Image (cartoon, rainbow, N blue to C red; front, side, top):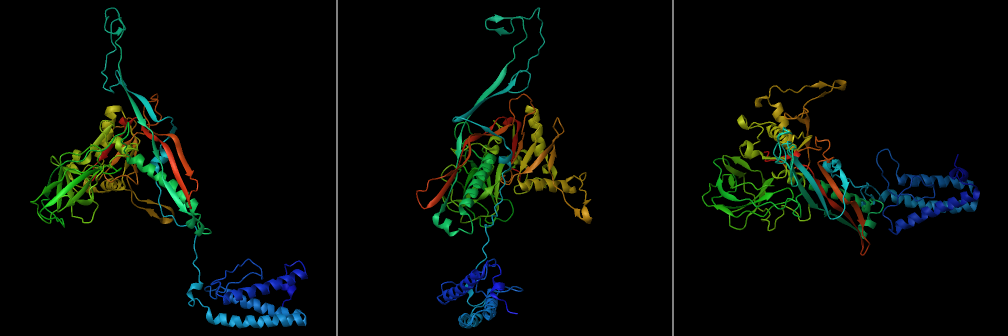
Amino acid sequence: MSPKLEELYSDAADSRERGDRLELTKQALKASIERHDRKVDSFIPFDSNAGPNARFGIMKNVGPGGSSNFDKLQAMASKLESVTKGLSADEAAEVTSQLDTLKGFIGDLGKDITVASPGNLHPYDLETPAKQLVPRFTPLRNELPRQKGQGTAREYRRILGYTNTGMGGVANLTPFFNSESDSGVPTFGSLSLRRGQKISYAMDVHTVGYVEMSLSDMVTYKAYFSDLGFEDVRQLSQMALLWSHLLGEERAMLYGRGSGSGYEGVVAAPTVSSIASAAAGTGSGFGTTEFVKVTAYTGQGESLPSGEATNAALTAGRPLIINLASQPTGAIAYGVYISTTTGTETFQGFYPCTTTGTANQIQVPALVTGGATVPVADGSANANGYDGFLSVLSDPTVGGYFARFDTTYGGTAGTSVFTQGGANNVGDRPWQDAFAALYASVYADPEEVWVAAPQRRQLTDFMRNAANGTAAYRITLSEGDAGSMTIGGMVSGLANESSPTSRITDLRVHPYMPVGASFIRSRVLNIPDSGIGDTTAVTSVQDYMSVDWPQIQFTYDASTYWLGSLVHYAPKWSGAIYGLQ
């Protein structure tokens, strides 16, 4: 039995609303057809939740198992045809006339509109939000304590030692004396009294100026309005801006280098003593004459270049050896610039230095063309920056321990020192030597060692390889749930052979650590009343701010802001190692 108006619009309140709804349905269909004829719309969206008076889409195919909007249009036409049986003669005649027109259009629709033709009828399925494939690692920033600062600089005083501590360069004194005969040894003002000898102190005063950090972003009006309904680009801008700031701060904490008051300053340019061809090997691109300049790289940037060195008696096709007179304090690696003509050197890459005999050598395997030119300004430090861990701990006069692996343990350029065998097969010796030196100097008991990922892999390989003389180590396979098995292992800690507490020092990987660099960190002091809760702290006069600027043009502008410094209260309890190959 054909449905009546009461059935077609069963949710209507009365017959009047049902009639109005029928008219609206007819008007909607008519309007949609007219818009199609005028080519106003290439696609009319279909709302599955709307009633019969909603507009219908005209895309015919929707995929296997699905009904198309075209099919729904046909079904509605059939329903309207059955409705005419419950109308008066005049009403039925009018509806029938309109249905005949609609059926003719449906026939044309079925012939003309397909998935393939015309192709522009099928919209993109745009997902929101955008996929952000941006890892964000900020372990130092997450863990370092933050304290309140004020003014323009932070000043603090440190007691480095006093009598009988064996620290700070203060001499030891015996407390023995004779109260009946000893007199005149200590003086108190103008008086010489029978008392024990007076103790002495060593102290210093540090002042570090506060610095600023800020980054900015801009969203144009056009970008904002164009993305409405897809992505909140202003929110995306704010989030990306914040993370850019935090990631920049993380890198600054690791290797930032300031040149303002109280900071390490620029790194000296290296001195190239000579260049020569390697005794063997293939170095494509090298001829018989080369010109070389070298910069010192700090993580923050590069120093000014060395003076130009040249050699006109090279062996063509061999790797190039660059001999440095010495390695400047603070240099993590070296930027190498080479050319076949004077004054036109271009960037070859950053290279470590290896000590062979008495020479500090850089070995370049092949000539690269098209690199950047030699820097004309010093970028090794920033006048507006502060000192990060590597900058402070690589200064032997400030940190508690510093060693260059190549200088201390030797080795062959370009070969991992963990796999060379013999005396150079050192395993964890660099860190054990650092632990021993730190304990001997200030009784330090570090909690963690930070390395780059390749260095932890080298240590892990060293532990696995019985050929390295480590057959006493073994890896156990443990059966897990449902018969599964976990295989492999890694070095997650180093047993500190010099620790008074038999500590297992955590071995941690930092994603932004320059390859070949490592630092050993004491997080707290083993001195209960030192007055230092944490050896390093972020001091903020103004912590993170987000500033939305007034709109003075057709853009939404925003900036971050921070004012403060990274303060290293006790660097003598930590150390660094450079040159891990």
